[in-house]
Image (cartoon, rainbow, N blue to C red):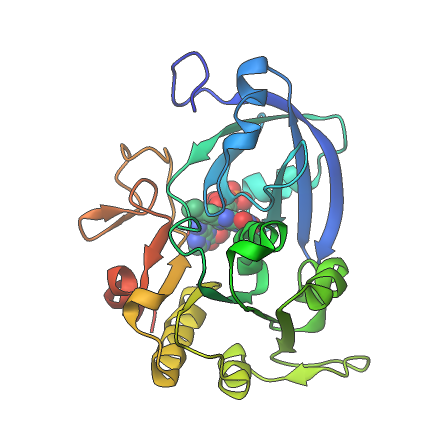
Length: 278
Ligand SMILES: Cc1cc2nc3c(=O)[nH]c(=O)nc-3n(C[C@H](O)[C@H](O)[C@H](O)COP(=O)(O)OP(=O)(O)OC[C@H]3O[C@@H](n4cnc5c(N)ncnc54)[C@H](O)[C@@H]3O)c2cc1C
């Protein structure tokens, strides 16, 4: 987990690939070049995150966006100093990675259950490794329902994977946007409206969601209305944080730290916290 036993020292790496995912969002593939760093790549679990450094600009935390392949993948929305600097990098440029950090989705514990995925905007990125895991170990899980959403069509992430998801065995895929455009012919409306229409079976199901806090709040309420219990709903949260290892005290939620007690939480652990975003 740490380079030189120093939890703040990133593993050195370089950008192996960059591609546009959506407006203002790029997917970065990172190759770690130190043997100690390379050894971490297969150890990331869906839900975990890492700090990615743009040297000279700083570092910022990002959820792991893939558990397939030889590289670490991160979906990065350009909103500030570090993220804009990352967006300006090119293939081959050096980066640093500090991770894996945080807890993960309890995918071993929920084997045999139906899985309902609800991703909003870039919040779909940390859910992609969950989808990959369920698809790669299809027999281990029940029915898979994926509900994917964004404010507008240009903000939908991983559109090039929609066909694979929709065609997977025992899987249904639904996508919606808050507002369409001239070319959009799909569903229009909030993800909560789509959720009510799809009305997934609750018995033996677990719902996993990520998106803006306000979306998570209303998705949880809608799931409850459909019959899901707090023990059947998971999410992953973001917060401003500097260290990622429970020392800086920036990301606390009551007595819990999002960096070490999370970022993955059950609904009953975060429901009150989410009400603060209303
Ligand atoms: C566990 C975790 C996982 C994350 N995963 C992703 C991911 O997969 N993809 C992604 O693009 N981002 C992700 N983020 C958010 C990302 O870390 C921030 O966008 C990043 O730190 C911004 O850095 P910056 O220097 O570019 O922006 P800054 O210059 O620091 O800030 C720009 C603006 O964004 C606001 N801001 C910065 N960070 C956050 C935040 N965490 N929440 C709300 N507002 C913020 C600031 O207040 C400021 O207004 C994650 C955060 C956490 C804690």
